[in-house]
Length: 258
Image 1 (tube, rainbow, N blue to C red):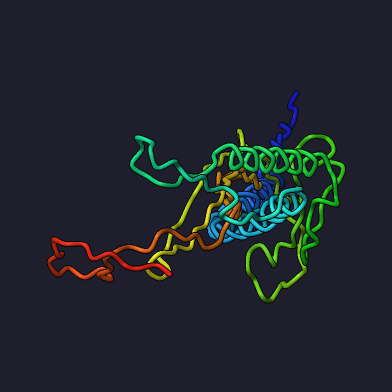
Image 2 (cartoon, rainbow, N blue to C red):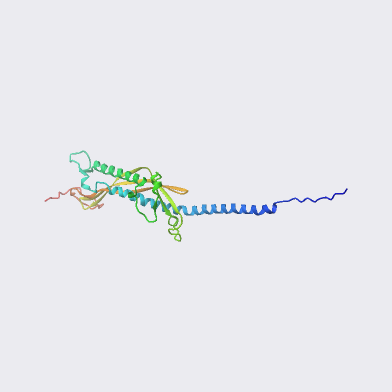
């Protein structure tokens, strides 16, 4: 008997799989392009963003340091209160010197206050933090020990005038690194023929670490604090040349005193 042959058709899904592959490639390409765009945007805006974060950090840290200085009990002294006269029979070549005990006492008191105020600010003491425009503090994260955390609008941080205060808020965090450093400074300017204007101060420097998304930076906040200033007078010289480079006479003429 003769049986007719049946033709068998093979089914393929090539036509249906093609659109699916195109969609997958399109999605992956879109994600890659988005990531590249965000990376490019971040690289372009990061210097401006870090600079803005540093400016705001300096404002906050300087405010805390100034508030600590203003709370100290010792006011600016008269320079004559910290100058000691050396007896004439002493072997030292100078006739006056600074009273280091008084200066060190003021220095220690100032350093202790600055440390205390910075620690309290990092623990969420709002009274020690300034009220800045477009700056919002995150009290919860500050109290959790994450340093001083605040948010600023993306438009302000990236210096984009079109956005202004719009856009997402970017977090900025900073905390103190190490100890507060200080050293005593002095300045002496001639005033007349037997006087000098003297300034004695303390230079304070605080190192802070600024942390922003995908970047961090270390910077320092410094401030000069006056300890004493004023005029101090010495004996009238027998000869006064006013700084001239002319040859000096070999004889001294006594000046009569009334």
